[in-house]
Image (cartoon, rainbow, N blue to C red; front, side, top):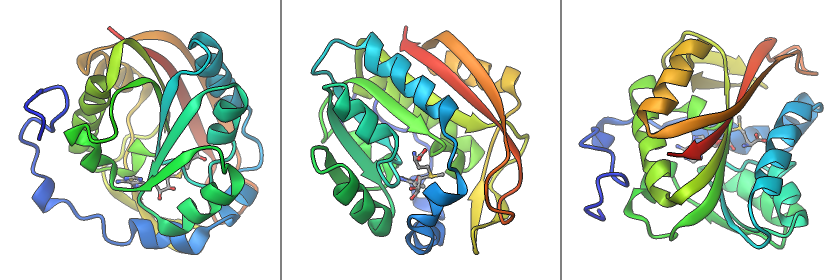
Length: 224
Ligand SMILES: C[S@@+](CC[C@H](N)C(=O)[O-])C[C@H]1O[C@@H](n2cnc3c(N)ncnc32)[C@H](O)[C@@H]1O
């Protein structure tokens, strides 16, 4: 633990967390994830904002990087130094093959709280914080705030839903997801110390019938 209270979980009970099944689900899903979500215009636009708003050569953390597509690839192509983290060894194998120029680490995002990966100019968390129980999400956001340099940027996406640790069928597996309605999400990110520089939402119908339609929220955030 760093002692910097921006980087810890403020006493949040990590020991009681149940991550069981989450990594295994994504190991089993593999590149079917990209097949089920083929249209990533919202994510690409959010990545473009981040890539363009940061000076060339910035250090960017990709939290829950999945297959590395499209985001780690997009950020590397824009000239940034990308560090991806994911809980799923299978997703990381794909990411390493898809984006050999990025560095990838097998880790629970909560384990970043000790700052061992250093500080970052920017970060992305595309559809990864929604895999945490809702009470943990503000702690994860405060931790990311602490991992960013002052003025650092975070591109965040979530699915709009008023649910907490809710089990859903997902590409042949079961995953547990959490979410907020957009007003509450705005409040949660502000409370974690971010200013909202931009926002968009998209209705999304995945290509697979095994994933329900969703409203995706994208927030462009700046460390206040
Ligand atoms: C819905 S996918 C999104 C992947 C990628 N960010 C994208 O948008 O294409 C969520 C990813 O978060 C990872 N993940 C889930 N819980 C995590 C945790 N506690 N720490 C790190 N990664 C996690 C999963 O393994 C999965 O690859």
